Length: 505
Image (cartoon, rainbow, N blue to C red; front, side, top):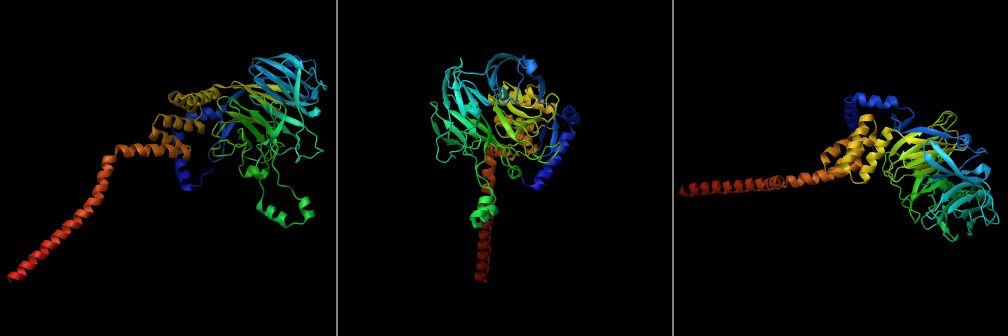
């Protein structure tokens, strides 16, 4: 959502600059400490930020005490304090106990199951655990999603959907999956772009849900209509985009990521969708920019093009974090689609990645898998990050005064952090301090919330001044009427006087 009023922007920019000059120490202190973490302002400019997360520990094969080194790990799933890692290259699942962000312990290695004709895995790429403790594994090389109980006894498997629209020669290769509370399975498979494959809990295929909208250029569409059959065969087809990954949140909604084309990124199209049970996208995107990672698509360090969000996870405060495998970065967004933080990059240092493949969270902690470095990196929030989370969570609880105080402390640490202004404004809005809220929304060009505050402020102002308003309206109506009446009477008197004089004469 981009605003167009140039004069409004210019005036507000001058006001914001004046406000910033009044707090030089706060702004400089935050930006000087940043560099690893950043965000974008209303204009799309890159802003350094106080770090939101710090890398805590990098867990390699030796750190985990594994006899066989990790090889091309792909998937990660968190259930309580237990992490399940897909060690795809070694055809196994590693169950880890999170003792702390600095300590992970291997509980068991799952490399075979009981009671199945195929009792081993072949390139498992993802794993999910149901509320009943059953384990679902995307066993890509064996063309199935297999379900086992916690003791690894085979229960059932989900195989290639029976659908007339699919190519009979297509080999079923499930890559990512999610499981709901009823143990229905939602799956992504290579070569199937009709949306998520949905299975009932008895392994019955029940259809495709959430296919991405098809986007195309009208000139290409018209040319395709006019082209010959041979020419059409050589042209690119207008087909939905395949999803990269999916994640089911605590409310049962599915977050799905897709890789955007260069044209889609330039058109500011979202790379994340939030699907309900009907497969409709209900993602709120009220931010100034789309939910898609980096705004700048230029090349640098051997990387170019838009962010490729290869995985996503969502916390209980509705902050969802996307993992960019193109530039090795993490992007956090709130429930309104505003970017909360961005950090990371490609490299060999702690907190950077060579080929990130999966992300999960435990509480506010984040865990990222690097398939090339064969490692798991744990991240813990900084004091600044915890302050932002506190402000968001207090607001969700209805503690608006406490939320406003937390946002004020965030602003004190980082005067360039736009969400602090908006957060204070929203807290004031809920406390019915509409005039004050309008000032904060105006500073950060939040016209939606400004309109809400102004509507309520106008209503109260009218109620408080209704007597004078009515009085002015009556005066505007009665005074001209009275003046006209007086003139009419005076005219009649003057006319009557002349008539009497003429009669006497």
